[in-house]
Length: 485
Image 1 (cartoon, rainbow, N blue to C red):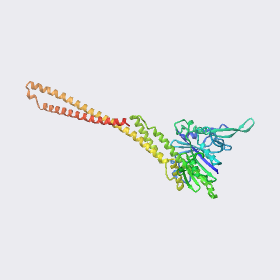
Image 2: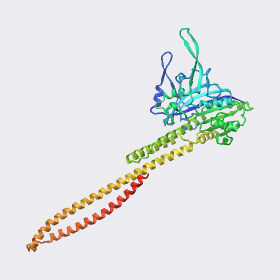
Image 3: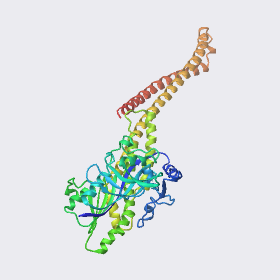
Image 4: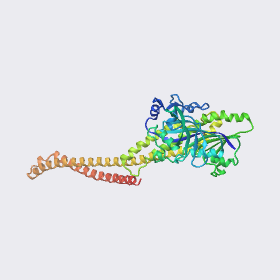
């Protein structure tokens, strides 16, 4: 059993900062003639059977519906690649060295500041075990034993002839060279780029000459990009495999999505899977796979940003700032959902089925639900704390207002007392001298006003003290709740 042909694309997810488009537009490399030439050219992801909005997600033309840009590498030598794939071999750290063709390199740069380095490659005429071994180690970036070898043609100016010189580069070297062109490039791990250990994601297409024995186990291994030596379980077949034609299966998991199609005794069917289906694999299905992959990593990026809002120290100014950040994140998440998430992308039923399968295998509904919950929880905690502290401050301001009213009441009472005692002294002298006629109605009015004012002031003081006591009790409870968060 041999692999008639394997087409593959490996996606390395990263994040970036700043204006990636400007950086990639300006990237140049020097030729042998010391002439500056662009490293990239703008491209797009073609598709033909998608509804209008979905078809514009990665289009080359300017469009408000576009959510990302595609840059195709125009200079292979800028990324350590040979000018062509003749005599190029991939050497895994375990298993056989295999001939390989590196068919293209693209940068997919999204408005969410998520990006992918996409490496295209092909394998032909290999036993299935060797092909699966190669794809497994092509996704193992951390081990520098995984490398490429070829013979470089070097021109000798003295003899004016070209000679072959052995050359090699590792997967890690290639990855780090890609990262140099993306501003603020970093991985999805809390570690330097050179220490990246997470595996990239595989998208592939196996065209086999016959059905493999024990296909259920093999399909599960393919879905998870495992070597054939890994003994996958048959029980997971229905979780990882979607049959779309009698001889064609999609195998998918967190590690990627690969179609496996098998030759049959029908030349027209075989021709379809060699040409038309291979074209759709590189256009319609690839766009849906990229969209799904972006949804997953964009959500992961936003979840990491939301994690920064979790704060063990509760301070009003800090929590108020975090609340504002949380509300901004809520807007970003809503925008992400509106622009990058969709259902039923095509008018072709089985295309929609494949997209739903990608979504389910990569747990996109779970990621989306987790993001929504995290946003609501973050905002709820911050808003609850800010509301409590604001309530405490409002109550404390209310206490100060009541105290000011008490001071005014006391001042009014004091002025009334001074007025009364001045009048009372005059009245007292008249009484002592027997001048009763001088004691008039005004003295009686002043006395009455004094008594009324003093009585009112005393009552208000006691009433306001009771209000202050009640408000302070509420403040105490709010502070206790704030501390216990």
